[in-house]
Length: 367
Ligand code: OSB
Ligand code: MG
Image 1 (spheres, rainbow, N blue to C red):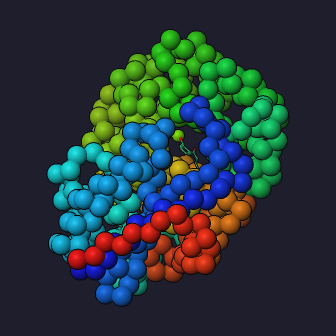
Image 2: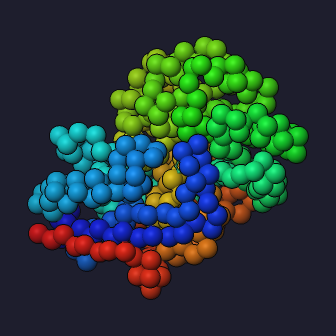
């Protein structure tokens, strides 16, 4: 495909409630939305870099600069015959998976729309709906318990609690007392060290499906050591930044469950490689989320239809996060089941008037 234009748009969208994790409280999304235009067809992607490097080290400004200076000129000059070429072609620029993904996703969406098929079909996903869970980050404990009860009543298939040292065992005790049966997980977003092993061991009492990224955000070795000291399975999020890193984590025994976020691993081709590796090794996967707008969320829903995504993902209803989303139709789960938008590509269209209201800047790169 010949790529005529790349559009980079920064949007700001307030969250309905602050999202509290071990790295702080966030009250709005600042997203980079990408559009590629090819023979009159558009495709959309979304970058998940934050303005400041809170989750991993990429930033919005750095990613935008890499796209402007290297990725978009390469794409506009050379086009591609299939979006799966881009991962290896862009490997000459090291790292920066979120920047690469922001643009690669738009190419995949555009390609699927040109073929007139849903994106999931290109990825080998047969399912037309997927089970979803919810990720809850709030203070104080009573508010967390109320939120868990609300999500269980709405039918969510799994609830994940954001925890950190000093806000962990009390939360777990309160939630388990209120909901003894639910599928429960915790996400520490790297807030502990191996010195905290006594607390981490006590998580074993709460029948957790897994504990997500307890240790340093780039570590594999300490997680492998921790896996030998606790019974609760370890799931890695932040540390898994490419197919090679996932293979290393599995070889080392750093995790028994894999959280896939397309932006963190470098795009949909990287997701396919990780998927095939995990299926081959019998390692369960699930699709994580970054509180994306409808564009990134729709991509997540399509990729989570691949057969290796056996646990409920974080791709919950957009209305949990935003009073109004930038896409139509709305991405809403019913009784914990998210339907995959059936149209071509990611199956959603931009709500242009509202998108313009929340747009901070637009830049168009041409041949
Ligand atoms: O660690 O999974 C995480 C959101 C932002 C950054 C990191 C994480 C999260 C979530 C939210 O847990 C998942 C979602 O609802 O999109
Ligand atoms: Mg996480």
